[in-house]
Length: 234
Image (cartoon, rainbow, N blue to C red; front, side):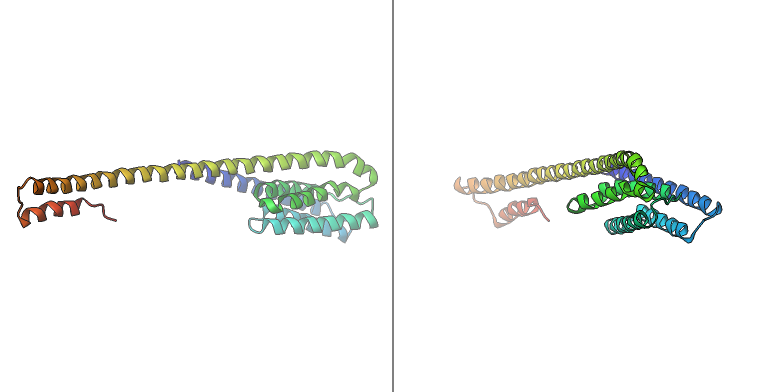
């Protein structure tokens, strides 16, 4: 059971790492294609850098919660700035940003401790659904709902993976508890067997003494020496 659980853990972890590596590879190729097609302004280059930050957050192995908060803050501030300064901005890098936020939402729901799960997930979801406001009010009306559906799918994936981990943890805890109970039963039977032997020898010596059949010191030593050997040792 333990080896099977460890094997499932390795497969599970390897699958998640492979999926993130594939996503990062595709995202980098897409951003490279955007760069090769030419940029109209330095602001578009800044947006590509923001997309790379979001992608790095989606790949984070440690400090996932900190990365998620930083990504939500950066992306949200950029959205607010564009909505106020240039409401007709259309950057192709937003596709990578959307993908990174979806991956990050799923990972946050999967891995974040329960006490920080809800606020971080809500912040990321709100950041994702606010992205259409970078273009126009019409784009916000048209694309906010679909992005909400994608966010719900990402949350569902994260909850499923979280449930799988919880079920695996319960199974492992139950297996360990059963092993401890089995060991306790074996130890109880072992001690009971040796104690029974000691009691039988002591009763035999007492019966012999009461019946008047005296025993030499050597016989008593052999008898109680056997009891000492029967005693369980640590």
